[in-house]
Image 1 (cartoon, rainbow, N blue to C red):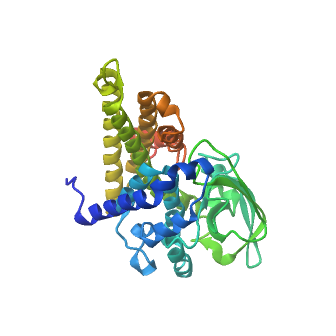
Image 2 (image 1 turned 135 degrees about the horizontal axis):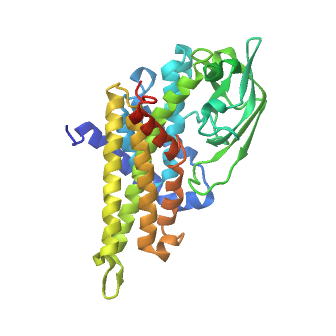
Length: 383
């Protein structure tokens, strides 16, 4: 097993690092404080090819792989976790179309998504349906040459700014989760209202509600066949979950770097606070959690690039990385004390942003269920 990055992957990592320092870092505090959605960054990240890592060249991608995407996600989240969300909003819909879309859908939408020209999102969660995806209530009823969509989607990243969305809804509720279907729709049409939702962190990534009322979708909006929605949703989440896990590693890393830097400079009781064993204990735990999570992300990404089943490995990586981000951000705040609590320093933002990783793309509890059920033989994750 080789733990060294290839020359190509090392170059991708360096490109992402340089991009974040130049394009994202200078306005991170302002963007977070003022809740600024950086549409310009969506386009710039498309220009440098970040979204195209997992897309074939025939649709405008580079096909560098999921490992490359994980490296990019970590570097961006290290500087500003909210901007990392933009990756999933572009890559997720593009991947779903690549998996099951028609050739017409692929050629029309994938290039514009990965260039950042079209802002994407995916709409799964509903007011009464979070982790229980099959419990959603949205319906898409056939009507002439299309479908009529009714339902409310909430906690949707990019809801207020997206041009397009992958929307999941029931076309036949009698079939239970086998009656769920997926659609790719243009949002700027009659029958849709949007509302912004305020939240604790990831302020530069807008989150909101989509209310569909007799929203007409052309027949060609359907992705795959009727009834494919649930399995497409699970497939989609497994892939976006990987980038999410890499982002959590980036937050864990940022928090650890801030803590080590502060402990190396701050003096109390006549010595650097890094010389106190309780501080060393926290830093040691932070390093172990970060390093372990990163290696688990690398394993899941490697399997994805080998086209091998990795649902279990991705859930393990997502759980470990989310917990590492939360632990490291909390530990960093403890080490910095009042300075960590101050909005003049980024540590309080790390803590606010870290908590989201324990919720989005499948909560930490859902990941534990997947992992435990696989171990007990109740439901194998890599079927």
